[in-house]
Image (cartoon, rainbow, N blue to C red; front, side, top):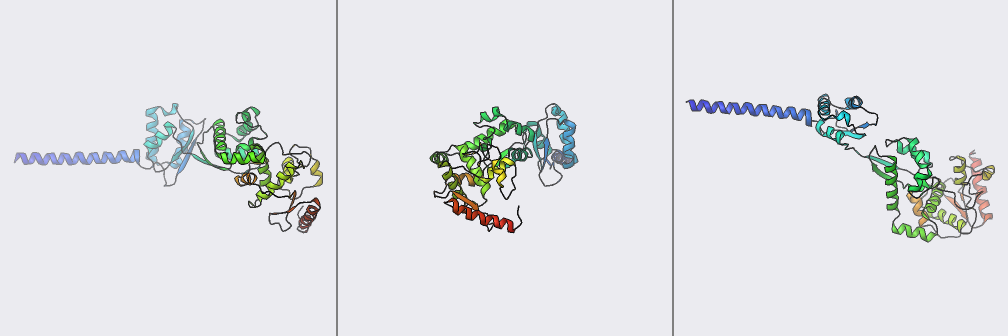
Length: 344
């Protein structure tokens, strides 16, 4: 009889221990492993160089559950996190406080997708990049305008826009300007494959000149199918030592990007980018050229056209001409269409 009571007592004790263990595991799970975020959506916290432990907590509070934030704070105290705060972009989601804290402590960031587009100016580029990464627009502009910095990558402040190839890239938010430019240089080298380099060599122009011509082609049309023909026309002019006389270069020189007409008085504006006044290509790209425009120059159409003018139907395409007389007739039709529509 005594043995039976002893066995019953053991079973009861085991059940109690098992129950307490289970409850303990639930508590541990609740505080350390249950979702840090208040919702199922991914949220991000950006830790700057001037952040301290209190500002980190303030950034976490609106998007974190109370119990997870409490656990995060206890872990921070135990590990002296306040003395080793790392800048970065950190994801707050279904991961628990323990894993989230480890990411913060170890600097394990969530990457940023940065889409580089075919923008016109260095100012536009610096603005779009600085909106995604930690450094400022002004700091990037300073680097792009620095002869010393540009020289590291084989460019000048005038040609540096040729460094950038439109695409989507992944960075860490706290990437430095130097690392950003190094990444762009690596991607540029990947883009200029053996085949593309051979095609560039066959045109007789170097890569920066190809990119400069492509930037002009890009400004002339959005019609990718017409780009190789436009590229061929400009190459014909360059090879015959004819002035390039590209309207987009005048717009760039004057900063009048939205102009529909090029007035005669603009053609004498003194700028190395004004290809009506100066022979050859301008000093560098007048925008970051699109990949389509670069390919158009590398695969330009061979023809005898020397002139082009926007079509009077405003289709975004052009009338091409071999003679100046034929070109004048095309230009008259386009000018009349502008006047009829009241476009200045």
